[in-house]
Amino acid sequence: MHPKLHIEDKGDTITIRVSTGSLPDLDQVRAIVTEAHATFADDHTGVVADYIPALARVSPDLFGISVVGVGGRDVGIGDCDHLFSIQSISKPFVFALVCQEIGAETARDKIGVNATGLPFNSVMAVELNADRTMNPMVNAGAIATTSCVPGATAAEKFRFIQEGLSRFAGRQLEIDQEVYESEAATNLRNRGIAKLLEGYGRMYWDALEATDIYTRQCSLNVTSKDLAVMGATLADGGVNPITRERVIDAPHCRRVLAALATAGLYEQSGDWLFEIGLPGKSGVSGGIVTIAPGKGAVGVFAPPLDEAGNSIKGQLVTKFLSERLGLNLFASRPDAA
Ligand code: DON
Image (tube, rainbow, N blue to C red; front, side):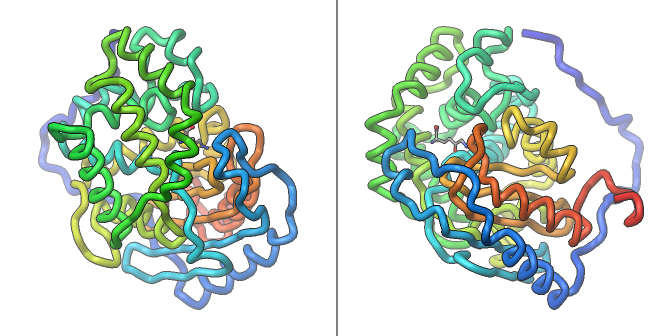
């Protein structure tokens, strides 16, 4: 194991302050989201994922944008009620649930939180890093995370994930059986990654069962609105802004967002942070969720992807909204944006 950077609190009594403001008023948010949809609706670049056969059949023209504020305000336009499988966007939420169960420090020790700089399904990332898993947002770390989920059987573990992600969304999420079966029949690479990790002592449940549970979690159906509610729960210190249920504790929440900022867009995470200045997570079915801590979250659904597997319109819309809604974490003054 490499030495980890641990910065201890000095233990003094301090006044906790946050670095964020609030979203513009609802009418302004609605106008800006409407403008974003109109601006990018005619962008037809990118291709729909086809390495999972069932995903290849989706219409490339679907396009929905949702914004949910930490106070529960909600704006949606376009195909924001269209169901699609959550895919990799499940990763931060399962990591959050695992942090809540075993503690964020233990989760960091078991999985890692550094950037990989490599594609989401990289085997090289496992080989190059002495700790083997590097981050819960890429497949190796995500399958290891799923293997840490509590439960005496695979069915119990999946139920924990389904119920946990449903609490993030504020409604019961169900599996897209066709997507699950299609991916389960073709996910040899993920099974290989899990077996490789098992060989290195970095799997915490049977490797093939953990891969199957991970494949099921990726097949849970969501809408762009669900993504925005789930993201807004992380933006709200772990409290769902619609149901007001606490899903995870605030200290875990900010650590999940840190892990997300390092690898949420895989090898493009640095470019994403440079352009957008917020933690975000993409999935191959065309979703992207982006979290503005203390303010809310943006969920976009638009299936055509770039070469790294990230929704092209999702990235364009999120950059547009980050600038227009004033979300960039690194911007200190409007005129310095
Ligand atoms: O493991 C996989 O390959 C898929 N279930 C999820 C990959 C994914 O969403 C990558 N995202 N951009």
